[in-house]
Image (cartoon, rainbow, N blue to C red; front, side, top):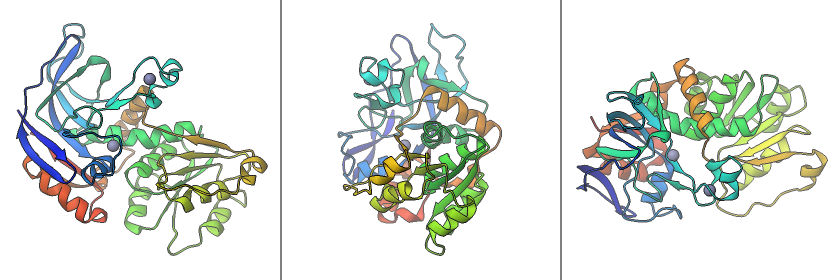
Length: 337
Ligand SMILES: [Zn+2]
Ligand SMILES: [Zn+2]
């Protein structure tokens, strides 16, 4: 079967690889569509410390069941599914606490093991989420779970004012999830086009920090208190700090990305404001189910959020074009039909 293979950073090609074989409890899936993720771009650029080569990427997956497993007849041939690409170890402190999303030894499809940018894959039945969604929507479930998990970590309720710093793929998921929970949702970015999509995803307000002062606008929108929850989805030292500076007293700060350099903090705010400062990583099964509900209710502007869909054969050129000009694309999808 054909597969998109990253031989090493900057060197990608469509190759013929061994056919997928379903062992034990595995279900054989025909892959329909794959989303390219920022982490795939980092791998291509040699800037993803977690990935090893050669590697087949692909962890944002829409597929159709080709061969059900004998143990799970309810997952029938022809059903459309998405899946969780995370494989926890089952033994580390996170796994034992029921939080395998943060497994110490996690392996993600397309990163530490081969992913789904290929014609067929075999995965355990427990990873599958059947849903009445389009192929494009199924492909968006995993990326949206990342932002939705962060909203869960921030314990967002309808009573909260929530600011989301950064409206790229991950931030946009947080915007949609915060709005889905009924919170006043403030989208913050430097790009009007991204803010326009954030408003379509349910943001109640948008702040372009190249045109408006962030602090004054947040104060004004929250009656002087600051947001109850701030979700940082940019990963710059200044936005890491600004989240702590701008959040309300006794508020919650959630970090999804990580800054590529050390961040200096005014730590007095941690104590004075008695903040909850939380990390958020990957997603849990309940996050997959909630994103599916959100998409079933058409709470996300699917078409606006996807900027290009290409066939597998064009994926190598596409990842090069994306790497040459990252801001030209939001979400790129690869079609395998
Ligand atoms: Zn991803
Ligand atoms: Zn573990």
